[in-house]
Image (cartoon, rainbow, N blue to C red; front, side, top):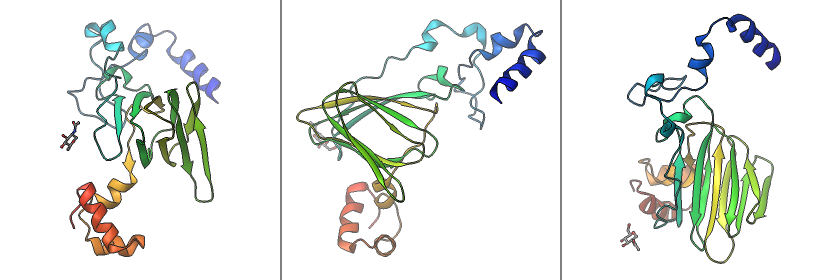
Length: 209
Ligand SMILES: *[C@@H]1O[C@H](CO)[C@@H](O)[C@H](O)[C@H]1NC(C)=O
């Protein structure tokens, strides 16, 4: 199917000199609106080598409930990713730090551990899949699966990630459940969690009580 598609394009567009030059990439013009097919392209004449590198994938602040530092390179801070269906992540976990249960509804994620030990896994309606990872190990979280990563070693841990989307969405379970303005009674009723526990977590995640 893909071959036929490529052949079709080759046949139709091979005589169009400008086809390759306007389609090799499309560095986002972030001032233009984001659309379902991505951002408009920055004019080719103003694209430089600098557009294709990113300098911020460094250890981020871990002073938060989960003791995790997260740095991302997605289309909104690395416009060259526009239309390429890929983006990057770095997580730094303090001792006992973790990435809480969350999903990326629109992206598969690869996690490559470079320092320390991380236990990563994901849940399906019928099972779970989990591994203890060390430097050099890679784990894949299939698109949409509820997943986590916990520092299970001594000391700090670091991992780099890649997403199959240039602008992945993240839904953090605790933030969804307890960072909202639904009455605590309703959250308690719909989760079967004790009301006191819901109120405690709502205070922690900034939801209304
Ligand atoms: C961590 O954050 C808390 C509140 O956000 C703040 O009070 C505390 O000083 C911070 N600690 C460090 C080491 O930055």
